[in-house]
Amino acid sequence: FKDTIYAKENPDKIIVYKDGGKAFTNSDGLVWVSAYDKNLWKYNVTVAKEAAKAGFNEIQFDYVRFPASNGGKLDKVLNYRNTDNLTKAEAIQKYLNYAKKELEPYQVYVSADIYGQVGSSSDDMALGQFWEAVSSEVDYVSPMMYPSHYGKGVYGLTVPDANPYKTVYQSTKDSINRNNNIDSPAIIRPWIQAFTAAWVKGHIAYGPNEIKEQVKAMKDLGVDEYILWSPTNRYEKFF
Image (tube, rainbow, N blue to C red):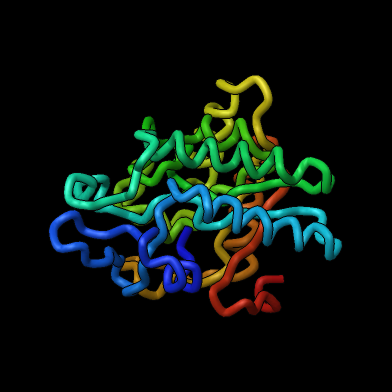
């Protein structure tokens, strides 16, 4: 739902401040379209259908959330254009349910990226990503378990980035426990860290050993699928 092209063409669909109508942006300055916009639901799924027709066997939805809003503290001043009076989590769940049904004739897998800490959070983190509401609607759920993205003290670790095994182990463990609440949960297939987070105080350099530590953490819990991510899209040095 972070789609600048669609937002430019549909300025009446973007998230704005109630007072004055100025477009809301995060620190990157990019506007967001509301996840309540059913026209965007249809647009996204139409693109997904084109990908399926082209031969791709999986459709993975990224940014399937509302923007970070200071933990929801900004909700009272933002206009999400919520005409159906749904919660954020309900909107995301209904979107994924709609997408899965629409894509069934194409025989593709459907997956969704979510924040790594969603499995450890009792709520939707004010993003609309409530674990059970996502995992129950897709084939694969991919929490982004980059240790660098966990704050100081999370899981009792002073610097999660410097503890790839412990961070991914605890995040995976919590995610598995949440899946146990669902009759037909998605397969857990995390994104893991293949980059060095130089901006994190106390960070460590990531290479093959750090990849192995993350993979071992997952496999020790029975999760044997994962995806690597690097913002540079270069992975040679990690193998």
